[in-house]
Length: 175
Image 1: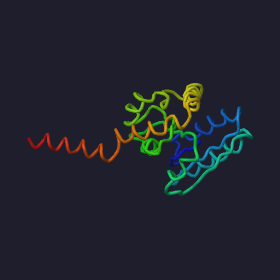
Image 2: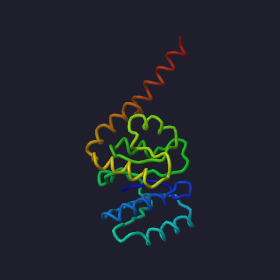
Image 3: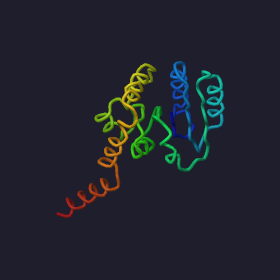
Image 4: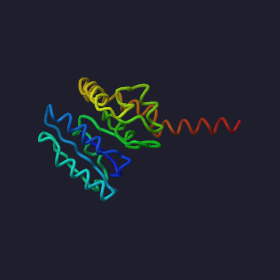
């Protein structure tokens, strides 16, 4: 499992650790958390939480990696548990690399994703909802989603898409 986020309380990383811990009760897993900026006290709390986790859970805090997407091929899925986002760029990055994810229902990008992949979006922080979505994603497997998610990203978020949309707006305003 991978999480890419700044470590601030608003990002709700403790939920990702608790979810991973819940899963680790059934099987051995690794949770890699990539971060650059952090609140010192929050990081200390997260480190403490990860040390008291299930023996089958390995939590790695990876600081300062400028291109975590180079490692996305290693992961089965990603988490984005932030409580509040305006437009979560991290999930766009996950999609661009064909990595399935579960995100909390916040931010502009989520509405479109939710229409096509409702299993990627959690509407509460109820652990059972996240586990249900996760089981659906894992049941289908990363390969099931890989090409579909990349195509979805290209169709709705790529540079070509934005260029076409901007061009359309300019042309409409010229007439």
